[in-house]
Amino acid sequence: MGDLPDGVTHWDGPGLDAWRPWTPAEVADRLAGVGVPWCVVGGWSIDLFLGEETREHEDLEIATHREHLRAIRDALPGMVFHAVGDGQVCRLAPDEEPPLERHQNWVLDLDAQLWRVDVMLEPGDPQTWVYRRDERLQAPRALMERRTGDGIPFLAPHGALFYKAKNTRPKDEADFAACLPRLDAEARAWLLDALEHQHPDHPWCAPLRARV
Image (cartoon, rainbow, N blue to C red; front, side, top):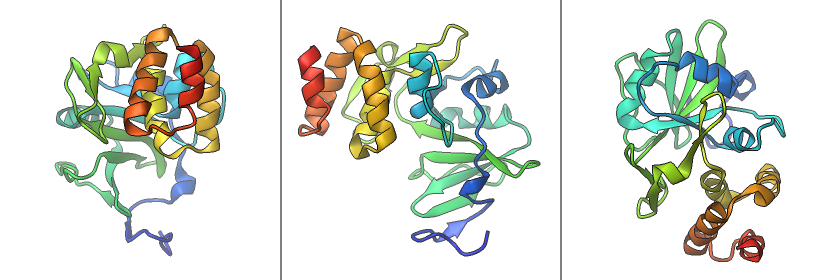
């Protein structure tokens, strides 16, 4: 690309205006039979929980474990993975692993020159969900993941909202407002406890307390 945005030191591939993400159904179709765990995270996971697309999504994020990235890559022929972080978007060679300090991997549709999905690498194992930003925070994976009626795996809303709580934007506030009335008692209690440990003065704590 041409001049780099502020704070960016290296950028392989097209710019941000080339994001044309797949839908969760499209990525699920492409990963059918992949044989490794993954799930939709971020804003799309909220809408999968709500059962409708409540707002426009600029991207699509899925999460998997680092050791499963190769299987995900093999299931997406014609796509080129790029390690993202620290002001860099770096194209990975077919057999190149992303640096250990990077957890984001943008997936470029080579023929279309469009970004399709962001594959996030997370800690944990098939039984245990681990918060990437503080690995002391853990929970049974069964509590933290859900599936839609047609089988698309996604991060449960209390987990997605907890990630969003660090730096809330208007769309995150909208996601919280949409989810709050529909969170069950266990989800509300988990989110409140997690916020009180990580962000004790967060404005979401008060409405959660009012419902616990």
